[in-house]
Length: 112
Length: 271
Image 1: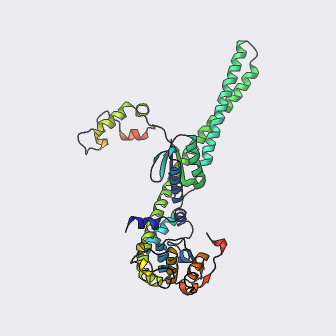
Image 2: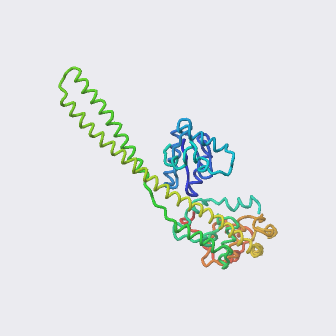
Image 3: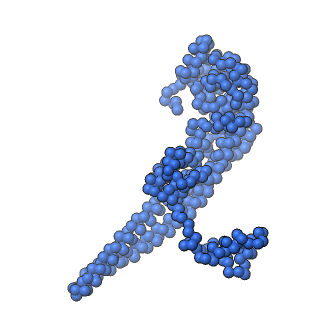
């Protein structure tokens, strides 16, 4: 899908109008951003917006996230274990220390 | 303050582009009064007209300093232009070239193999393969360099977007605070405005009630009264519609109704 983000009032207004006029193309609307479906037509609409507003329009392509493909087991397990921890006030770094759970810094350095 | 009243003041045509202009040139913190009420019909809401009139009388809102502060903060923002377009184009071209050469190398390799299989002479085919392989290696380097350049451009663009985002937030804030200022000024001059309505034909001052949101008279009459209470140093451009409004309702001289010099609007500058 395409994520379109606007950075000026005029671009924001035009995105709003685009969403209103092309509801079937819009997967989700946020304040000054929208998620469009992954069709050539959606890309065409997004490009038109950028042609009008240049750097005030950002277009990114998104892909579905599958944690079973993108991540090692340990990361998923750590997320689950931390969400279900007993002591709610324990920060993750302390929670992971001395266990097999991955260290935040090592995860920060790893590309998905 | 009711919700509809808010909408009425907010939904101005061209508001978006207007607020994008803020701080781009030497735009003032509030628009010059003549730009709002220098021409009738004004294409502005009653509050905008009244606030503009109030400003010609030397009044300023209590948040004037804040408006100037926000305007200056907007003007101080510099957004670095980043050419992502060229960087993306370069990656696309380099990737395409790499693919093309990969296919060519594979075909040439097949050709060499085929000649070997029939024990034909391979010298020339090997030479072609070698030069294609060298081209492919250069194309791969170019693709990697192009991707790296795009990555750097994206990082710069992300920083520039932080600035764009901050500018948009400030512009939104300035627009909201300008509205607050207009509201305050409009309320201040409202009694004077209501008195002025008595001189404008086609409106009953009773329709004005006690605050701008409650005004129920014709918008054109309100514009004329707003101009009347203003101290404009230039003549006011009265459109045919406005002149007819006055003439058809008693025939008073337009100058005496709006208490200002009158000119005909110049078509070319009309928006």
